Image (cartoon, rainbow, N blue to C red):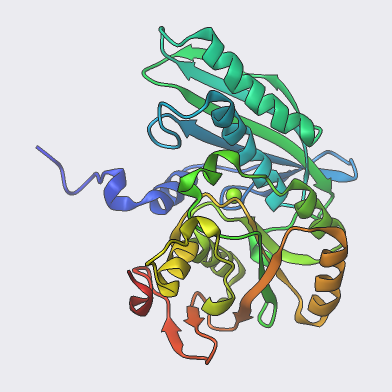
Length: 320
Ligand SMILES: [Mg+2]
């Protein structure tokens, strides 16, 4: 018999509540600057002029990729997800460990191709895969763990947004399921540049969808935000004949695994920031809204200022 008093299953609790309950069972240490709840944990490096960044992510067959996905792309995704988290804190990725779970009948060539994909991406950003374990299991699973570093006290956190800050996002959003979720570019150079220039006051990578991820910044920073829907950069992957603009924007707000950077810049620096960005990168970076004083409240408006509060169920007007 199910015991309704003492237990609930994960699908009832939701991921965030489950993580909150688990985190409440843990004790920290004096050298931990940031524990559970940001893109990376941030720890002091014992007198060194930098802090460590630590993050880990699973990539599981049937959940994060289909069985027929190219193995190089699966490796790319496993490494890319953790590199993206390091980027989201403004850090330099250094080392990656990769645990692999595979079936008895997994061809060796498949694993080699997975490693090639992960290795190629890490090498491009100067990171090295230096360990991991191989275990037997029901399906292919990759569990990547990355270590990076950032100037001491300069990790860009989700908690730094203040009312009046301008909200920016890199690249274009939505429709990553069409393939970009396997081939995305972690924004490592951009993240480091944003941290080193002191531009970003808060930052994270877009993994669960723009609307859900903006909420994380609002919660951690104790602020609200207004997003201008007409400014949200929509990927060509969600545009198709017969699909209206509102539907495309909804995909850009709700689709996950874009792995773009979402960040805030003080409004008095935003003009200088936009010039500096344009000089440094070809990648688009778009101002999509503003941080407000309404704690936890996300509003969306169109170009004319019409709109309303964007609730957990989305904004009715912009539903399919
Ligand atoms: Mg993240």
